Amino acid sequence: MTGIPLIITFVIAIVVMILAISKFKVHPFLAIMGIALLLAIVVGIPLVDVAATETTPARQGIASMIGAGFSGTFASIGIVIILGALVGTLLERTGAAIKLADMVVNLVGKKNPELAIMIMGWIVSIPVFCDSGFVILDPIRKALRRRTQASSVAMSVALSAGLYASHVLIPPTPGPIAAAGSLGLADNLLLVIGMGALISIPALFAAYLYAKYIGKRIQTPEDDEDSSLVSKTYEQLVAEYGKLPNGFNALAPIVMPILLMALSSVVVALKMSGDFITIIKFLGNPVIALTVGLLFGVVLLFASGKIGEFNEMTNDTLKVVGPILFVTAAGGVLGRVIASAGFVDYIRANASSLATIGIFFPFIISAILKTAQGSSTVAITTTAGILGSFAAADSLMVALGLNTPMLAALAVMAIGAGSMTVSHANDSYFWVVTNFGKMKPEQGYMTQTAVTLVMGIAAMIAIFVLSLVL
Image (tube, rainbow, N blue to C red; front, side):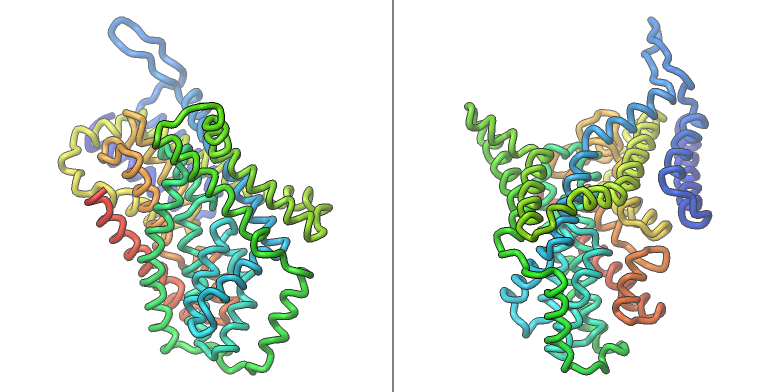
């Protein structure tokens, strides 16, 4: 199958997958794997491996393709996702996330409560899922609101936006890590981290302005609460963790991996060599760097007197991460099928007409998936699987002209921006924000849904501008 029929088949496959996940509530793993299998059969991929002949090259069969796509994704990013999530769990359970929030308040000050809570969310959600991050920081949000008499809605929107930006743009959150791995940047996570931090700035600025705007137009029951409860609320929160860790211990699990990866990138760029440089490169590998971060997290756990809970925390983390890993691997299978179906060849043959789409293609696909089925992580991993690696000659990334590490990093950002657009009733985070923020569903659409649309567009504009100059 080639040409327009192939494109139509691909579109139908994506639509059916979206309907299966969103309308019929089929688990994303089963939906993606099922569509990958059906698409492979329909487009004519051999059922079994075909040996090369004098006139035809060898062709991989469906069974081998599924195995290769699945195991390849696990091999490249599985361990990194697990380690990043485990670091996040340790920060959450030891009170380090609360300590990080306190440090941000001291830095920004109490006169800018929306900005303070937004930065808190942005930092905490780098290792912690945004849903959990909102629950963790919600008591501080309430305390800040009472202290400053700021709008409850503005504070909720600002916190949600801060958490969401780093959740979809900055590793070691599983989504961005998965996208980086699928697009061929598993060994260059520092570039993705730096680009994510940069792109999050315009997204957060737009969200801050919208939070201030909508906060003046919507009120919730929280706005009528007695402000005399502030101090008690915050002290009770801290008491739940006992003594909070010091600033270094709270920062180390996040900062140390970043520093190690940064140092490794520098020595590679400078083409340095030697035994010591080899050690630096070893420590800068994402798996090893995150392992170092995990070790600092274990020290944090020991200092808090909760080392006995480490096994339980690990089990809880693996239960959460497991579905993400499988969905990620399924996205890799779908990407392998698409690459083998001839779709990329058609795109490449018509590259001149698609050149104007370029960086917008991953944004559009991710936004469609996000809006349809609700999960940002599913949208990110599926879109990344469709695009493939920038270094693979048969990938969609190459066909779209996104064939350098920098453009691949921007593609990761475009996927992340699309996965923000938009959060509504089929997204669990939508209900976390509206319920904890004491908002009605219709208010949630005016706040959470609207701010994610604003953030996605602002981020995509910044990505497009950077793609013109980088």
